[in-house]
Length: 221
Image 1 (cartoon, rainbow, N blue to C red):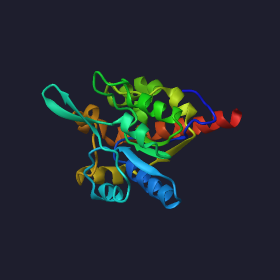
Image 2 (cartoon, rainbow, N blue to C red):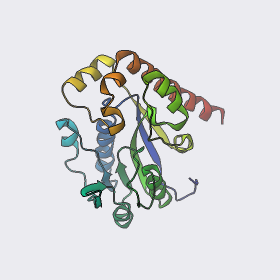
Image 3 (cartoon, one colour):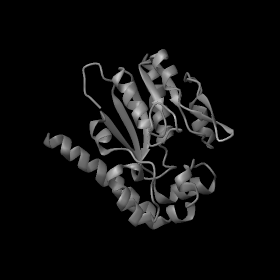
Image 4 (tube, rainbow, N blue to C red):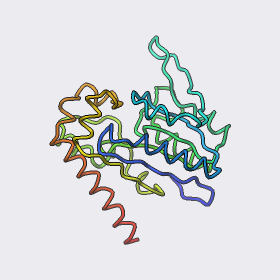
């Protein structure tokens, strides 16, 4: 991803696990930007259960998802061409680590985001620490889960801002029990193993350490 004068700015809302409130915080920030007069659109948002998150979508223009016929069913994907045609100042793109359907222009959503940035569009996006490429082996050792969806570290290094979103393990556990947590496919089948208290604490520490090291590297530069 090239850094140019007209390149959009990337803000990543980073969390230790699903359910910490990344999307909620992202949408709150999007409303703040819109109140400041910024042209904001929602390019993609996940299927969230929590009414609080759904409520925050009100008042934000939404670019309709693209419908795809895949293995006999209709699957929705982000419509990057529609976003580029709309050309907002800021696009909200949830779940940076998503792998696109076969036949899409880009294999990964982070490549879609890179194209939006290169077109001069700012992007707010969300990411869990276990999707960072250089950490997937450590995450597998911690959780026993092999992560298939990863994002290159260079994308995080080139991000203009990373906002760490964190909650206590107790609060996260309560959110899961209340059915408020959106669970990606690679986590849902391993729910009990992934969300054990020891795992949550280890992933929180990993997220804190990663963001602290990034700040150190920026200061050194």
